[in-house]
Image 1 (cartoon, protein in one colour):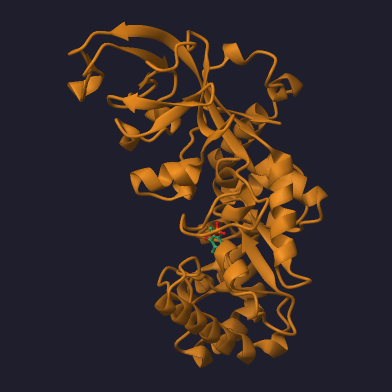
Image 2: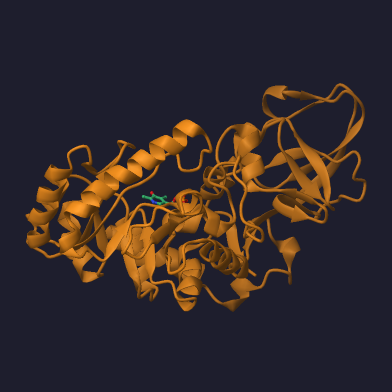
Amino acid sequence: MRLFANIQIQKAERNKGDDFLIIEANQKEKRSWVEISINQIIENYRIYKGQCVPGTEIMAVIKADAYGHGDVKVATALENEGVHLFAVSNIDEAVGLRKSGIKGEILILGYTSPTLADKLFEYDIIQTLVSEEYADELAKQNIKVKCQFAIDTGMNRIGLDSDNPDECDKIIRRYCRELSVNGIFTHLCVADTDTESCHRFTEQQISKFKAVVSRVRDLKLPYVHYCNSAGGLAYPDLSLEPKKKIVRLGIILYGLKPDYGNTLPDGIKPALTWKSTVSMVKELRKGETVGYGRTFKAENDMRVATVTTGYADGYNRLLSNKGFVMLNGKKASIIGRVCMDQFMVDVTDIPEVSMGSVAVLLGTDRDTSYTADDMAESIGTIGYEVVCDISNRVQRYYI
Ligand SMILES: *Cc1c(COP(=O)(O)O)cnc(C)c1O
């Protein structure tokens, strides 16, 4: 029960009232916050859909609070736009969406304890069957939960082994009687990488999946899908005719790249801007050091500004002495280590910076831009992690 009580509190806070949505009025009262353009997310959805095979349906992947963008806000806007398929990672997320009025189908892509079968049923949620053993445990609850089988075609994460399609066929049929199975899906693991061997692997994954699909065709499962953001664009010609193609669209919805080597269709842009306030500016004399561990030493006299965001806000500590922020459209390099709630930047060449100035941590500031993908590249991770890491302490505002 605790599980569900938590959801309510979280959502209530997020929907506190209209003043929560007004951003410009009083920026100086804020410390660390993100501004999210719902219009840009809708635009990204429309552009992406326009690039897919006609008739493609989009399953909006809004796990992890819509990659940090706010799942209820994003899902509500997309539902108004005609989307009726959503995917999340767990039952808390799924129930949270239902309680906020989302009507579409909600698929949980990962594990849920089989003992929560009654909750899955009560909230009309589709559960992924991660294995035969899992399906068996869920079926033992004697509740006809809506389900989809994951099929493993080479990622070796979850799903029935597609190397044995006859066995998959048997298992799917068995649980069609005991549960309410309405689909099967697989997941591509190198669809974002443009090399000969990755293409070959992906095509192999798709053909293994099709071997299973063709065996269960007579079951007329309404949801058969294998594409993520990258797959939907890179493998547009391999649709499961005569089935309608479904793409599970995650990262590109938010305007980020599956892999920073990718090029996104024109007009698809990041929807999130992260900002933070300068709390003080000081002069530093040559030879002085900055921050924990004294990892930065001033080579000359300089001016330093303290920014009110830290790793507890999800600002990665690997950006120490490496990243930069934008102040008045100019780059200010991070000096010293990122602290829990603050970090320091060099503003020697940006004399107009003072207490209360607004630093852009992610986004576009005049002619300068620094996206979650850029940040990810500089610290050796992916844009997904950068946006998912922005903690709850950072307020979300919708513009
Ligand atoms: C997260 C996830 C997606 C979405 O992937 P993107 O690369 O963000 O588009 C799709 N399918 C499954 C099974 C996932 O776990």
